[in-house]
Length: 216
Ligand code: AP5
Image (cartoon, rainbow, N blue to C red; front, side, top):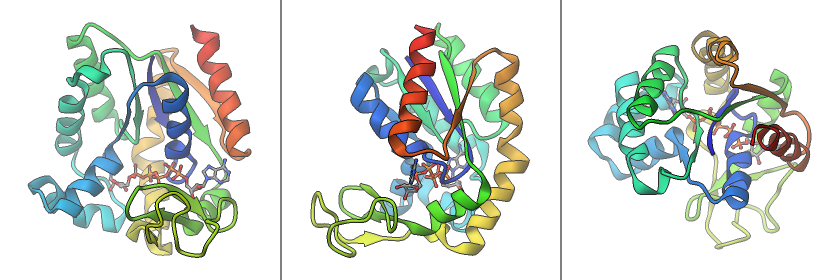
């Protein structure tokens, strides 16, 4: 199954991707995670991406398209994949079409997850992430058992630089201007399934499975 998770920052794409990996056993490819790892390691891509990410604006298309082209060529993507945070511009969507065409394949579904802005702001401002294993928490809806400590590995929880109020506002603006046009792009191709992301994690997942299994 070849899936794109499309939706505003903080709507729950990463949370749902983790559940999809468990159910379908296909890899989760997040350009945000790949870029954060590059920043942390101080690679050439990381050095280029850092200031864009901290400001909440998009990293240049050629950087992320390169990451995706390389990743989709790996053997574990042959059975399918979940793209999270890519594509984010029409240019990236066209590049993805070209890559998939050259592989003789196509997307099965684009899951468009939505929620009102106030829900998104609450989710992003309360998000905490484990520095060691990457598990995602929320201070109110999914708190760790012990303040500031990961339940799974005991690692320290931190707040992403771009989950601070000024960056959240910018990310929502960038989403509206550059990513929202992809909704019409994929609707026009008959690939779009709309998912109400304001519900609980399990309810959102049921809607997703319903949309995907209706397509099989
Ligand atoms: P990226 O990492 O992709 O961030 P994003 O799209 O803004 O998405 P998030 O990771 O913030 O949110 P999410 O939807 O995954 O939500 P989550 O599941 O964590 O991108 C970061 C930056 O990298 C960009 O700004 C850009 O600079 C760069 N970048 C990345 N890709 C790029 C590209 N293709 N082109 C150019 N630049 C790119 O959930 C959020 C919180 O809510 C969590 O605390 C979670 O526990 C909680 N939660 C989730 N679901 C629910 C629920 N149903 N109920 C209650 N709480 C919930």
